[in-house]
Length: 136
Image (cartoon, rainbow, N blue to C red; front, side, top):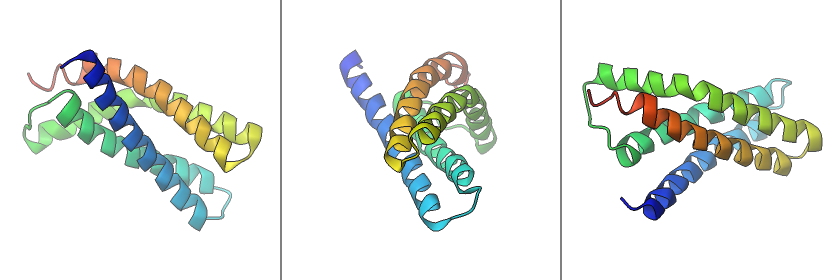
């Protein structure tokens, strides 16, 4: 695949996962008004985005073949574990924006910046450590 079309596809998938994440956060924050609402929104949004991004990456970025459920689950766990660092980057950037400007718009700008930085790192980690092993 040509670099330009690959980059476009990866970016589109990252945007789909970001939209999933931010949408879940918006829903949680609109229906929950506790002191833990932000944490719930952050965690549930991250999980939703993670599941969507894994499915898209596995099937249309790395073209990992379907294996048995146990092996696929292990690939997902490995994918998720490597995402801890990138998730930390995303959470820190979003939270800095949230506490600095204290507006939903700036929280989401921080989320987009943090997720973008994380996805760049995540692609390289996945390519090297996750999907090169799922075939073997």
